[in-house]
Image (cartoon, rainbow, N blue to C red; front, side):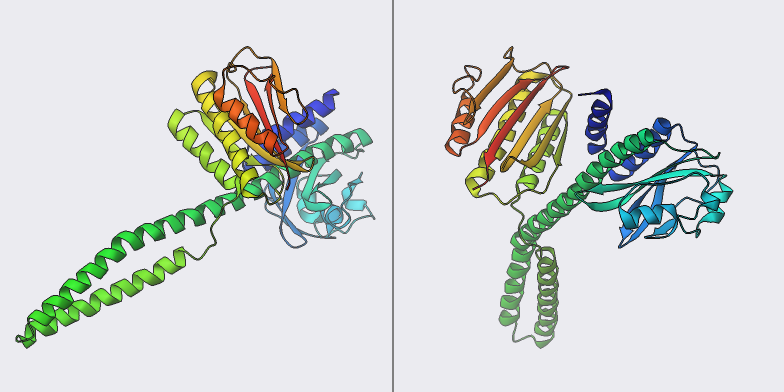
Length: 381
């Protein structure tokens, strides 16, 4: 792998662990430094065909901050519309773009500008610019390097989108848990109190005033119970989430709470539907790997990633500790040598057997810098 590819890979790994805003800020910073530019800007599509410049570096005023860029307008709009890089030597005099944004561009003193699409699988997610305050040209090498940063940023934004969806699913699951708990506790108490008040009212039928007051209390309890039922119905509306990514995220949170070791769960691609045995074996692989990190690795961080690859789903658990043992690399499964896993690991042996029964594989790889990587893969049904 050449230096440019290594930097691209390292950047992808970095921004994939960051939130959306941090990824955009990092892209703007790196783009400006790499291109030797005076200004860099990045905008993400926030509505159909419209991007908004949310991150920047090197600007002198706020004219370009949060600027809305419709598809087709200006240099960035041309990039959005075509999905291809666009560059001009003299922005104000260029005939290849529209001039809807000449005022804020001129206020920044920008002359030369280059924009490349931020896209993933032919879907344009935004635009990344670099600019200089002099009449000059951006060469093809700069276009290539800037496109690599844009591609890495697209990965980060895609991961952020999946993380947002995962958080929404987890929030829905928590709402359902609260709904069940309230139904079983507060709902049951209201029912019991209502029944007791009804019995009291019947027992004091010869005291009309007291019976009337108890009747009022009974109606208020019934109203409270009905209000609770409506609230619980709203909390319970979302369908139950039994996804692999949610299960792994929950295990990572539990691991971090238990050990204090930073743990991140990332879903890098859309995942195909798995049947229960395949989903359960991948969850078991993550749990076994986290348990071994807790027992042996003395790590400060763990990253668990999920991705669809090679006709199946891959779970990768990487830590930065000292490793579990002096094992080098161990492979087992459909494409590896059975029995090559470290001896004495009952949990690993059982996990490997389960993966093999489903046609899957298990690999343990010592990282060059520190720690260990566990790769568990199962084919789709």
